[in-house]
Image (cartoon, rainbow, N blue to C red):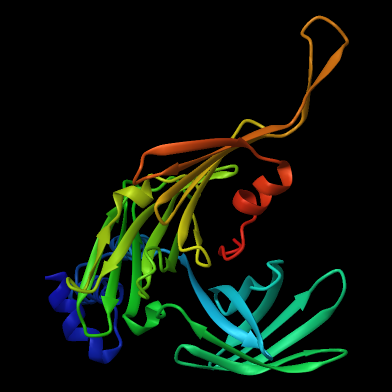
Length: 339
C-alpha cells in the first residue's frame, strides 16, 4: 500500500510522509464534532509519524573511489593512485625509475582535475582534463613544465552504478545499489561504526570496481566487508578471503593486497601475496618498560623477521628485516591508496 501511494504521488512531488500528515489533517476537518483537544492530538500524531518515517530514510554515508593510473611526466614513467571523496583527492605517485613516494592533494570538478605535490625539495602542480579513463594535462614547477598523461587501470564505479541508497535501523544496515541499466542489488550488513563508509576499488586487478564497507575500526586495526564484481553475473559477490584481512591495502603497483595489524604499542604483523610467493613479516619497535617495584627502566631493542614462502614448492626462507625495509615494504608501500 505504501509503495502504491508513493508511486501515485511521485509525479506531484509529494513524499509518503506528506501524504500521511495530509490525510490525518483532512480526516479531522471532515469531522464536525472534533474538539480542539482532538485537533492537537492529531497534530502530534502526524508530527511523530513524519519524524519516524524520516528515521527510516536514507542514512548519510561517505563514498570513496580509489583508482590507480600508469602514465608519464615528459618521458619518465610514473605510477599514481588517487583516492577521491566528494571531489577531494589525497593520493600519491612515484617515478618507477626512482621509487620514492610523492604525496598529492587536489580536487576534481566535472572533467577538470588539479593536483599539488610538495616535497622537501620542490613544489609542483598538475592541471589536467579527465576524459573517460585518460588524464591529460601539464605538470608545472617553478623551474620546468612538462606534459602529463595517465591512463586508469580500472573503470570507475560510476560506469556501472547510477545510485547508492543506505538505510539504517538499530539492528542492521541495508545498502541498495542501482545499476545504470535499472537493475538493483541489496546488501544486509552489521557494522560497529557510527557512519557508513563505502569504498570502490579494484581488489582483484581485473579492471572492474569492487566494493568494500568499513565494518570495525579499533585504533590502527580495521576490518571491512568486501564484495568483488563478477561481470558474468553482473553483480557483486562476497569475498570471504579479503574480508578476513586486517586493515587491507591494495598495492596496485605490485598487484597484491597487504594485510597489516598492530599488537599493542609497538608490534606490527603484515602479510601479502605476490605471484607465487607469500610474504609475511613481524617488526617490534624499541620501547621502554618499568619494573613493577623498582625505579629502573629497560629498553626492548627493535627486531624484525620476514618469511617468504613459495606456494608451489612449499619452501620458506626466513631472514631478519630492518626497520627501513619493513616500513618501505609493509608500513608505507608504494602504490597503495594512501588512506
